[in-house]
Image 1 (cartoon, rainbow, N blue to C red):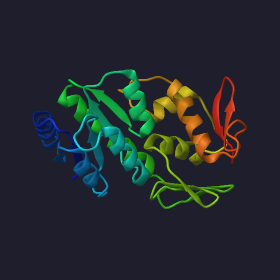
Image 2 (cartoon, rainbow, N blue to C red; image 1 turned 45 degrees about the vertical axis):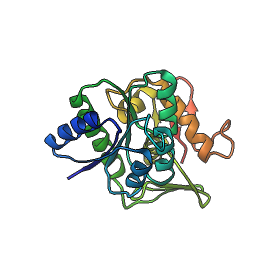
Image 3 (cartoon, rainbow, N blue to C red; image 1 turned 90 degrees about the vertical axis):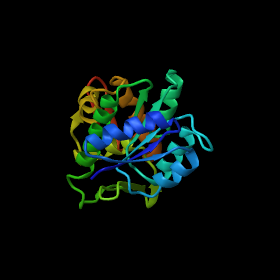
Length: 227
């Protein structure tokens, strides 16, 4: 049974979320403050973490940053804060999705199912094979990446994009193809987010992001991992 962590200080909302998740076959744990929520999240036993932004003791942004330093588990933000700046900040810190309150519990369950399914599909196909390209090493079993022996931290979506490209070297993929393959239908964005993630990946793996050696841009066509 998949385990979901709900870090939410509104007990009524948290219990409603938990009930819907349980009806759909998930085990859901509720934690009402940020500090305790982070401790639970870092236990590594959860398949997905739902985080509110406005929490006592430690806010959601800090929780997301700390989780991302240690784990690649999917993270879904649920918050009453609907400003684009909050959404962008949350996604930049490593969240995979953002759902604005009020929302349908059925939509929350659907997004959770989708993110877990996508995460498992992307990490599973060649889990025993380590990808190595000129100092870049990707270990799918642990979703770890290193450059010249130095570990590099990625958000879940950055890792998914890098892994997909590195697993299909020397093939050109359009932004539309990458977006359709790696992002959910419910994601509030467009193909521009692919370019943003490519830029972030390059900053982490390229010696000179302005003259990339690994992920090349073919203007008018898309991106190619140069093997």
